[in-house]
Length: 341
Image (tube, rainbow, N blue to C red; front, side):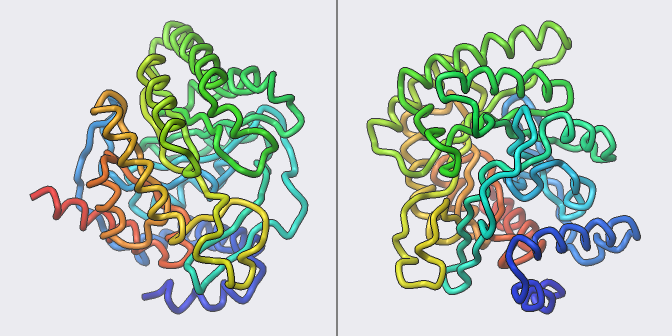
C-alpha cells in the first residue's frame, strides 16, 4: 500500500535517477529502523539448494545493487537470499546515458547499462561493511574492453577475489549489453570457460577450507540445441546451479509501447514466458542433476509458482519490485509455500 502511493512520484523522475534515490531512501529508512514497518513479515520456508539452506526461496536478482552498497536495507524486504553485481575486475562507467527505460504499459524495463560498477575491490569493501548474515550471491562479469578471447581471465580474477565473501558466485555470460559476451554460451567456448572455473573453484576451496558454489546465468534467447549443449556442459563441468534467465533482445509485446524500440535487454512481464520455457527445457534435460534458479517476469506469487512448477528450486525478482514494491517478496514466498501442501 505504501509503495503504491510512492510509485507515481518515483515514476515522474528519470529511471536511473529514481533508482538511485529509492535505494538511498531505503538506506535511510533502514538506518532509522523503519523499513521493516513497510514490509510484510515472511514465515520461514527453508529450501536446500547448492548445499546451502535458504530461509525462503525468493531472492533478489543481480543488477539492482551492482556495488553491494544497499545490502542491509534490501535484507529488510525479507528475501531468502540477495545477489549483488554484476561486478567486473576493474571499475567501468558502463554505456552512455540514458540507458534505463520503464515501459509501464507492459510492466517492463529496458536497460543497456553495460556492467557499470565500481570494480570488484569496491564491492568487497561494501560487503565487508554490511551487517547482513544471510545468503549472499556475488555476480561476476568481464570488463567491456577485455577481448572476448581473454574473457576467462576476468572471470577467474572475479571468482578468486569474491570467493571469501560470497555464499555462492554467479558467472554472468548472458548480458546483451557487453559486446560479444553471449558468444561465451556457445558449446566449445562454454566448455572451456566452465572447465577453468571449476579448476579454480576447487583450488580456492582447498585454500579457504570452504566450498563456495558457482552458478551460471544464461539468456532466454536460446534455441533448443543451444539449451541442450548448455545442459550437457553444466553436468560435465559439475557446475552447482544455473540461473535462467537474463534479459531478452526480443521486442515481442512492446513493439508499439513508448521506449519499446530502445536498444538493450528487456525484462519484466514480456520475458516471463521465454524464461519459463527455458527453465522447463533445462529441467527436462538436467533431471535434477543441476538445480535451477528461475528469474524473469515474476510480478506476482502465481508467476513465481509457475517458475517452480517448470522446474526451478528458487526464484529471483527485479523488475517486479519496480512495479509492485517490497510486498511482492512476501506474496511470492507465501504462494510458493502454500503450493507445497
